[in-house]
Length: 482
Image (cartoon, rainbow, N blue to C red):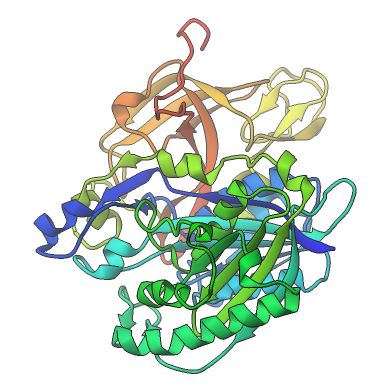
């Protein structure tokens, strides 16, 4: 039996209210909200955040990592290697990109399910769109991850793949040239006419492959960059209306290549053992995958349920959204811009920079951040052990707001954080407002892009506040914070 071993998604902290667009852009907008990546997030960091929860929830070590996106940080260079480093996967785990098209994520999932050992399929997208456009309002930013592999006693399959089919046809529906900030689309009725028969055929063939009928489908997930086609194809499938899963369009939007994996993960969160879940993706063809939830699904608890993330988040003003997207130029801080990061320095310190691995003195137990060869309390040189800190929470012991230092979104909030179990580090905070931070605030680490200089993305870790279910920042009393 081969199928899904773990799943999860990541939604950025910020939400854009679509009704605020028209007043500034002169048109566009609509009802509901869409997720917005922070100024320090990109497709790579979104994918890392989604994958961290999946990797933590399973004892399985992936033999391969496939990264899908339509908005990669780099061309020529493999983007998946940064995800591999941030997750601290072993060097024998192959990491490769499948980028450029919305169909890439389903292709990566199909490749992973085909065999070859446990495979981590990750997607991340930051959707572009001109101000006031339909893509700007309907788009979204998100990450999603699925770990697929064979059923074992220590890592049982949560949803078994029982059928699959695909239909491919060349036609021009949506396209974007590399570097362009907008996607162009042919007349909608043309795409609808092509997608509906393709989707219907793939759906029927996949059910036949599984030996099932439409009446057996418990949850139907339809993902597509062509919203009109996605709605139209449902009418001919013969699936009960109540089986149609929420496409998250009203609250999250459409995150491009990430959408199929995110919606599938969200559907599995709601599924029960025995449920038949069908993913139908319409993107340059049609792909249908039929899964049957196993008894193991009942005991699975996602690290950060997508439903909880949908309900959370904080508002973002539309002008700030435009500034983060580089669509509204504002006066930069009167400080020198950052210099190009050093490739050799990054390579020498990869465990710290990407994996956030400190060192612990074997004699005294002192935790050194960044890692050091000599202990702060004296003793032998190089008497250290690696101490992974990415999943360790901490507490703010002091903080400051810097309105002069260079930042794509000033002011910068810095804090000195004491980590649980030892270790202290001055670190930049993100996903917060300056007035939320103070002594005693509890934080967790998140992988972010500090800045980009000369085309090089400088990735490192920031801290973000831990929040309760209602979004309130979690804090302890000042005396407990030290």
